[in-house]
Image 1 (spheres, rainbow, N blue to C red):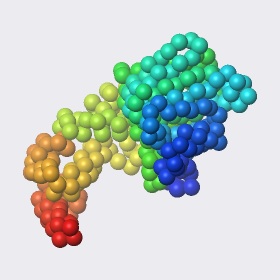
Image 2: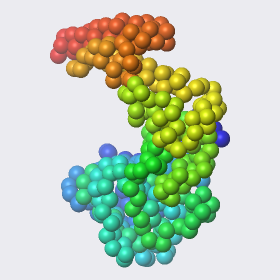
Image 3: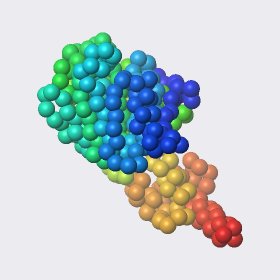
Length: 330
């Protein structure tokens, strides 16, 4: 299993920006009917706005939605006349909402996941919404989770030992719908990580899925000088030897990978250090998990061909030139 570049043609974008406000709700309804499923929508306040990016990963539909407060409804008639043969997995990134069915009301908060089949519902977003939704064909859902699609909606909390896998899933999906250049994950990896999320327990994963989970651990703990292969392996539930094989398949080692990410983050911080937050080299080294500023400087110069102090000086100079240009233009 591997990844392939994501082409621009694979991203389908929609936005109510530029549409007259009285027509935005109708446009949002029409978009959903054409690309997702027929439903009804109404705004809860003036100034309604919504945008969506959609892509596919194998047989999976992936959507990232950002919208102001509104209500969507898919009643029994729409479900009967326009059935959808998918299980929807909603990853809530921002905003609270209430999901209402004949079984009751579920309150959803950021960090939670809603799992639902195609049943009548009313979903009210009380504030700004930002979520990721994966549409999984029912046959694939049964194959990878070894279970039946849910007969009623379920809310899943993403804390606990499977947290790294869930976070890795979110990162892969968000990248796939955010950038045309983000490496496209294969659908098997996404399905494996979804199985961890849905089952709430560790399940056998491929090297690709383990790599995604390990990368998420590294990204989250990059500031910790004690980050090691031992701690990474423990967090994703595999042996250190197995972790080494996972990274060997990516033509790298765990220490090389961690160092590369630390240096990349340090470079980004120094390249923008000419702004309001003027960090010293020692501060950048500390925030990126280097045990000493001298070791950081040596590694940085070897990687980028310049000292970190030189990059910081260039960034400050560029900021000063830009500010002077803006002052003269004004």
